Length: 242
Ligand SMILES: NC(=O)c1ccc[n+]([C@@H]2O[C@H](COP(=O)([O-])OP(=O)(O)OC[C@H]3O[C@@H](n4cnc5c(N)ncnc54)[C@H](OP(=O)(O)O)[C@@H]3O)[C@@H](O)[C@H]2O)c1
Image (tube, rainbow, N blue to C red; front, side):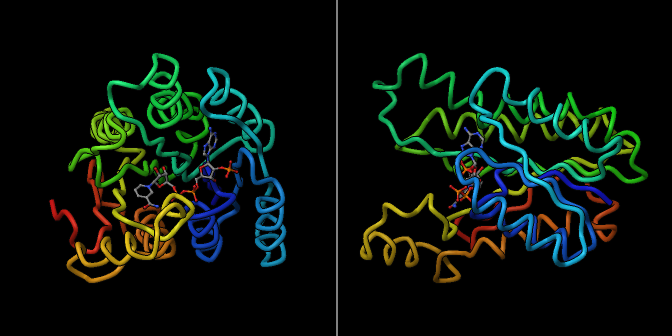
């Protein structure tokens, strides 16, 4: 079994690549900036007996998805699992968002996953049980006071996933994971007080770990989730149950 995880250099993507490798999959480790982290992870997975390689692509650029798909096609002629995890959350007041910032945010967080799925469909259709998993956000449902473009893109992923779950059935399942507050670089700007405040707002009383999101993604990628498609799974400690 072969998996591509976008944004696998750090954070949730890194733990997802590890979880899929633990489940016996070969993994294409995509990254943009964190080259040594991606290379270290590929080495770790290779040492564990899996095929693993790194691919660099900037998915906020118009040619990013095609570049990444081309590199995967050059290596593999089939793909079983495609995890769209790469993303970033630019904070900005709505009125201050420029056209270019809007385009870049939508490109990375919504358009690139759509184009990448389209580019890799020929490989996914060769799988006996294809899986596409989008990483959205609780903000897709709750909205964001600091990033309307990000929340709009993440909400768009849910509509995209539900559409593809219909169009690509029965060969490929398509699901979405929507994390809440998860302890990665995305929260690095928090003060201790902000962090404590976040924890208090979560019914389970704490911020989640990247591993806790990765384990849900790995479940959706596994044979145990064969009858799950079009679903959005919230991994948020009860912050916003849907
Ligand atoms: N952490 C949270 O609280 C939280 C909550 C809801 C949703 N999410 C979503 O979860 C996903 C993973 O986030 P994370 O928390 O693990 O954040 P992270 O630690 O900052 O990791 C983000 C990943 O995305 C990649 N990436 C960022 N910009 C990119 C670009 N322009 N082109 C290609 N790759 C790019 C990064 O690659 P490099 O580092 O190599 O550049 C990195 O591997 C994102 O989609 C995020 O929106 C996170």
